[in-house]
Length: 252
Length: 74
Image 1 (cartoon, each protein chain N blue to C red):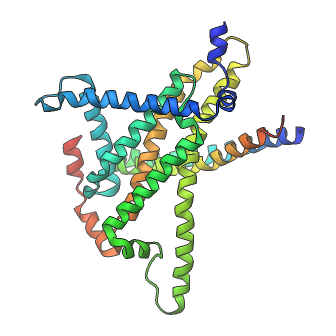
Image 2: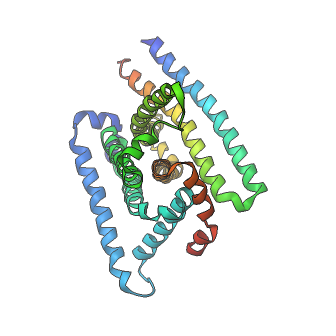
Image 3: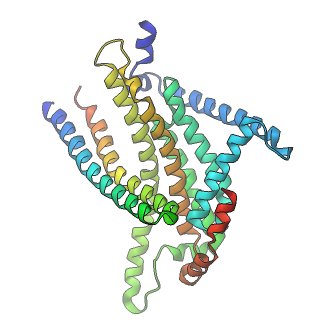
């Protein structure tokens, strides 16, 4: 009974008592798990046919993310897959930890906003690399307008900068709200009957949320990347013609 | 004190109602499109997920607001 009550300790209270150290420990644990998984998966890479389970899992994960990236960005989106894979693995492992252990690193807003800063800065970096610094800044001011309509371009520029900053808030808040919301619902269900963890019935849907949230972060990063790295209107149509569905099917 | 508690309940309830209807409509459109054109399923699926995510953000903003207000009850 004592153990059950300890497990059902509301996470909000636990976080208030020990500020900061929980998140370092649990995110370190996530890093360790991901590192061990990657090391195990790397061992089998030199064989012609992958036989070990971690390698096959990693292969499927890579192909899934690559298919999604090619679908959203186009054939030249393959170079962004390593970053997306890293983000996906970290968020998914962190989310899953909340189902088994007492605390989740991704249920902490500070870690999420850190990850959002990394994501947005990476998107800006790729945008500058693709269009040059001036081209990237011009990207914010919308379509080319002549005459005194240039005032409207300035307005669009300001709005775009604000929306760029709001990406930080929306990315981090989405993950935080989903994971922490699940924990709050779980702990309030648990407190209906003392000692009986009814909230455990929520495990399947919480697992689904973990999967979806990791997926959502990567697909949003893909969308931001495809907006930031597109080259104006003429090249966009070229990109559409170059988009070959056969390419994705060959990998699936 | 009670006003805040009633307000949190109302806010989360109404937001859940609206977002539920909105997400249902979005999923309805996406699934119908996928049933009519299975070959475009992957792209429709991606766009539908994006739409669902942006709708869900409205609810999450309300949720976080309620969570912040909950600290004022004690």
